[in-house]
Length: 414
Ligand SMILES: *Cc1c(COP(=O)(O)O)cnc(C)c1O
Image (cartoon, helix red, strand yellow):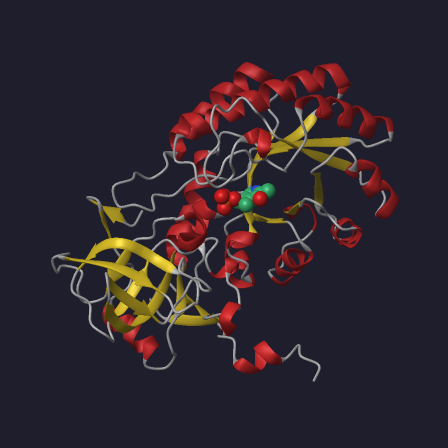
């Protein structure tokens, strides 16, 4: 989307960012509303062949009600996995079966709340059926999360499927739906989420094939009909400039073929719950260079840290960096770009080729719109940053203020 000829571009100019930095301290996040809307539309359009297709935006990727509200306008529901995410959905006006509640290791009060809101409840374990019945009572519609294991390799974020803590085995699914049916459940869905940040269409389709085959067998053997199958999220985005955009049309066509093979003309409604794919490329972390330091290596010290964006430190994830005003300058220096946490993995980039950077330069860290601000934390007393929405006319709306020291100390009882 924001890549042309292997170069990552920005939807805003240095001058536009400076209108913000004059009023608000960095670091902060900017989300591009037009980009987010068009990403959601592209996914929904690609699946227009499937009656009942719906994208449930995974709130955990960007838990700001304003974003969830915008996505509701585009026809999306919300995928929630905790009490707080149910509250975000509520604040965004997303309710009832527009919510898919997919949690794991779930406490009773969350099942009770999800049921009260009429959300679709997705169970992560066979034993949760009894637990749900005892705590919240069984809803009319039940869904189980399946962990397919045919994938030859997992990937670095989710790992090997057999090591995944999520979901039920294939055998357990037959048992789960039979039990639910015996308990009087009337409507059924099936869910999976086997990969994360996966750009290879064939890899996704491998999981979908196993999912559909299993679904068709369950329908036959247990004597139920799935009203929906949720393919999960996990679609990757091109974090590196040399990577290509996920081919969502080819994916959709592949899914269509597999659905025809497994279900003939009675294809269930399909659901997805992408987070990263919808907002990832349309969020930017803006930060100012505090210090340029040379010891054994050259370091660029930012006012943002891993507490603002954990992915590079946690997974070694690549995030592209642009120095505002130096987009066309030669990248003839090699730097480690770091934050100020007292942890040596607090690095946004290691040995990155960049133009010469000076204290006071503004850098933009790309593709921070999913699992970015959301994964923020307060270690070393770092404060979580503000979030801005860049609207179509490129004006900026503040959609979350920055934390203050008072926020940080508000929970002390001294
Ligand atoms: C994290 C998660 C998602 C979203 O994943 P993305 O990689 O952001 O698309 C969807 N569903 C479940 C159950 C998840 O845990």
